[in-house]
Length: 408
Image 1 (spheres, rainbow, N blue to C red):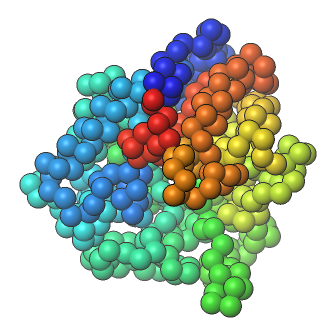
Image 2 (tube, rainbow, N blue to C red):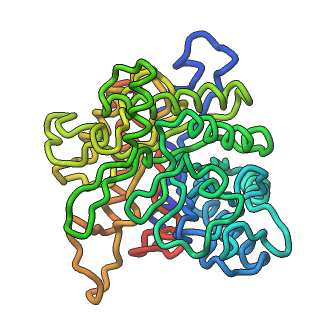
């Protein structure tokens, strides 16, 4: 049982990097220390990636699928699940602020029948098994491409349409609107107040990834009016810097708000694994999150606006965007000694079936992930600032199907 044995082993180095050690003075916003290796998986609900398997299942089947995920997590010695509950200004939990998700019931706004609350159920069942439940939010995405149903009358695109922008096939909240930031924080803190979650989690979606028109021309995000209003109000930042500042404000507000509400609940971010090409110098090709989605992720980590950091290092060990090189670089940027855990691209593992696409740089064998976990563990002794102390796998369905006999 390769992955379960690997995850079950305790590293020979004691994980001494706790939050108490990281922050010399305990204050009201400090969550409790983490005294174990972090072993987790993302459970994505958008387009039914991981759960539920279909949007038209009855309550009992949905619950059974969720229990199967949690039981599999126990068998693999995971100790946390990152559960997506807000994929597009909707809710996979009982909310007075946003409509029920179409990925749960097939139609946005339709409650599950018989009635149940997936988040409350997931929290209770995870904790019963000794597993943390991290609530995963998408703060800006308003509607995913190819929706399953019309927007509910309580959806933000109908209740506050001036905050929403159509961009390509998506609807997107405009990060430049202060009301958008307030709404995102309100939604997150509502969950923190009402549910016994262990952490709030956001991923790599900030300003949208670039869309193109039918001729292949890159489309700019339609926020000219919002930016003009900012300049008319005395703002002096360039448009790109203003966009980055908007996201900075949200991240800092979430960090402060979560800890002010429940000091023991953690706040984590999982950014794309490259801050900017050339950082570190050997990583020259690659996506520029700073310039393309206006996420100055290094600043958030350096400023300590998070309790944990999960860069998505979805590249092979021997690729130009080398896994160990990027791991070491992120560790070197962890100046506030936050918990550094690495996101692993389990979705890139393919079975060794010759009928499937050939195994290559875009698809791996399971041994690649095994080696990456080993490198993460060895980084505690070899990388700057104590390296990384855990791994998060994308995504749970690949563990459920035992891709490439990873649990053989």
